[in-house]
Image (cartoon, rainbow, N blue to C red; front, top):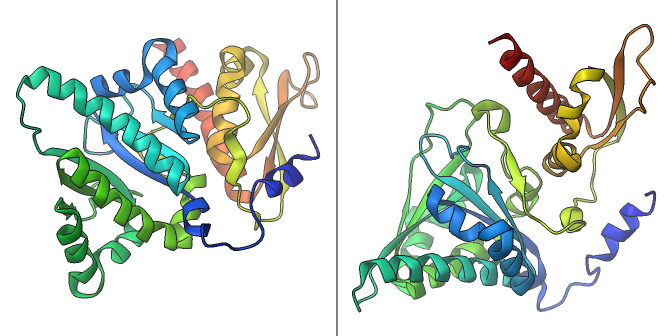
Amino acid sequence: MESTPEELTNNRSPEPSESDSVEKPTHVRFLVSNAAAGSVIGKGGSTITEFQAKSGARIQLSRNQEFFPGTTDRIIMISGSVKEVVTGLELILDKLHSELHAEDGSDVEPRRRLRLVVPNSSCGGIIGKGGATIKSFIEESKAGIKISPLDNTYYGLSDRLVTLSGTFEEQMRAIDLILAKLTEDDHYSQNVHSPYSYAATAGYNSVNYAPNGSGGKYQNHKEEASTTVTMGVSDEHIGLVLGRGGRNIMEITQMTGARIKISDRGDFMSGTTDRKVSITGSQRAIQQAETMIKQKVDSASERATE
């Protein structure tokens, strides 16, 4: 697997071009109800797989019962180039709107609400000096755009909700304007690596329905120096870290960017019956991965003592 960094670099075009902003990796996060999330996933993941294939974007969802702090809504994240993200979002919203429209039974398209999740640090760009940018976005798109204040009741939460209200067309015009603005902000583009940065604070994880290998397509090259830390996990709990078909370990790898290797059966930490779990990556990635592994093991220990 040594060739991975080269493979990743090849995915990025080195020379700037006019289509740079359209090709620049970006992402959008928004809230959906539990029922709507089921509709987006489809039977056995069929709808989400189809939408990923059609758009070329990667679509991720928070798990069932894992909500944005202070709401009962799950989070969908779409990542890829601007064009891929917009196409993915259109497919999802079109499906949700048409289903709601069918339930309403009326001919007039109602105004709908879409709540985007935007880092606090990027909201200033959308608001603009004296509110000039948001005002021009509202006039141009005809959509209502409201930015919620930062909710300080959740420790570590650094995201705000940007609510778009309007018809499907109005919302999509507003998305185009907002996404173009956010994508200019390099800090926002880098946030795609930690889409759920309040994982530890809100007890929140994500599950990916991405096709294998589409993960690290837009990895940041300016990685911190990579180190390896080895932790011990008891033999009986190693299955929890791996998950069915390696799902848990894949999830931890995708969320943190760390590489995780588990020692073979019978290869224990010196003087224990703990298997070796080697975590390689930046210091931050290692810390996040360690926290997630401990959470998985601790949750099982708690269930066992109940």
